[in-house]
Image (tube, rainbow, N blue to C red; front, side, top):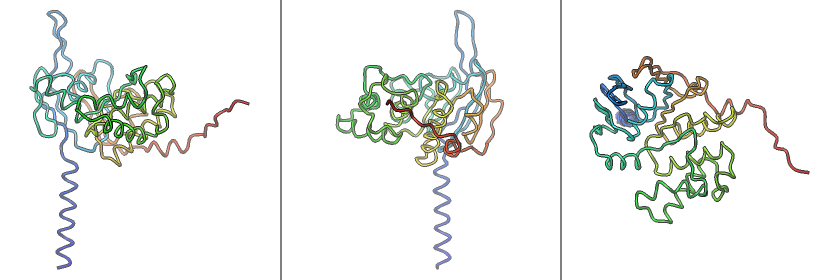
Length: 269
């Protein structure tokens, strides 16, 4: 009987692991064509890709390779010209703009290179912004925004304006804003592009913790090959197609940060 119980427990654990690593995104024969007058400009050329829940993926490729177009489609900001896009097993390729907006608001968080914060609005209010669209009460918005700011290490700075924060702190606010709706997916487009090396590692460390501890799927677009080494899967685009898709043991940003020289802040006499 004891052995049977162990076997059943192991079987349940395996089932749980299988459910955890369920398919989150699948695109099939994805085509996107833009029109400049009568000229067709193909951005995606029949590409296919599957992403499992809980992955941390780096997407790389030269400018014009299709990375941004792909991110716009899987982020429900655009629709493909042809092909299918499945998100959490549902084909959402042909949904209306309003239906895509609902998925975008509830399921997907965005982090951009330029932060995209409202300059005259506090960090807390910037983080609260996505919650205005889902009918949350004022108290619930504030509580969840504070939780998100705490998660990225900004408790105590919630009333600061963006101009009163460093570039790294502004990006933390942007990550908190992406987290506030508790998404299953975060899309990060060049999130370290405007940051120095230490601050970049601090931001990547946050992403790794969100991925490893909260099991949020992270898709990171980057031109920086050293930043891509912190992802566990590398996907390379060229001319609207995937030309490389390979797993890679990720470096740990926390370990690299620990090896960097300590910065001693100067104080005024």
